[in-house]
Image (cartoon, rainbow, N blue to C red; front, side, top):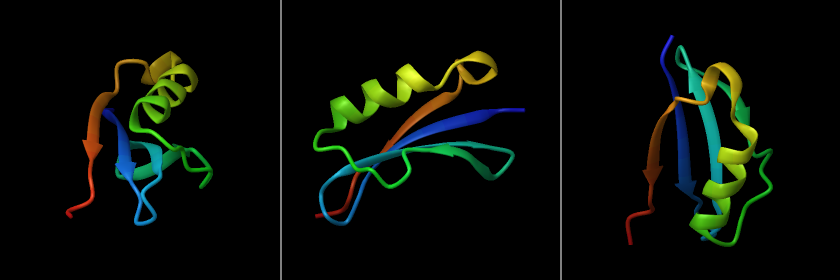
Length: 64
């Protein structure tokens, strides 16, 4: 089953991440919010591993 790790910019300008598989969210940052996209990406990549290590990686930015 294909998985996707998505880094996304929140309405308040902080960043979050989620891991989806089969249309369901299976892991998330828990609404913590990160100040920078790069740190959020680093944290997500350090947590996601095992069967999901090769998840497709996407980024969603707010439209300004």
